[in-house]
Length: 271
Image 1 (cartoon, helix red, strand yellow):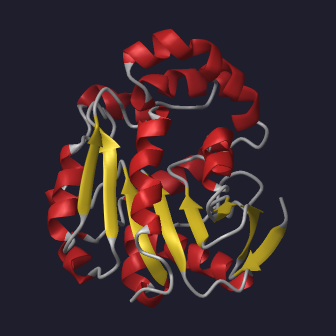
Image 2 (image 1 turned 90 degrees about the vertical axis):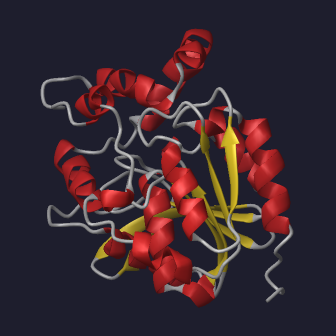
């Protein structure tokens, strides 16, 4: 992956496919390696898919300084600037969905469509995760092997049924995810950034066609949060995938059947 200078950091990015630009924004503590390669391949059949490592992850710079959701949103805009992309379809998951909300609010003319996956508007209007999920999320990482940190987090992303059936796939993905691991301090900086999320009151300002999607069994960011977001954004479409958790794209085929037609129904040339 090449690097580009965006503000005070160098960010790693990659581009696959041809077509209208689609920017993917990943979530807390995860680099772009977290995107399912098969999903990216499928999307690249239709779109010019742009992925990048948020500051603090992957091969991007990892300054040990305060981060914020606004900062991440401007980083994403900076990636598009460097690629000479004036306008793009924006898709963010989890913390990436928080960033995508802020992107659409800060850069409305650059947001062709907005897809918010398994995310929240936060604050007093957000529905928090159950205590057992929060305990896993905030558990100390020092002294725990990177492999076990990933395994410890599986129940936050996947349903028990999925883990039991696909443990071999989850294990096989670990080397890819750990090629450029996120240092504990950078994970903490990103976690603290999620506390800066302040979008709820401004969500009605979003004019971009919006799809909100999540898994019905999400134990990290409960599905009720997606319902709240969809009710706040004028005309937003809500799709909840049954039998899926936070990693709702485990149901890749169902997601693609909803996502691709949604984006294609709002081509860049349309107002």
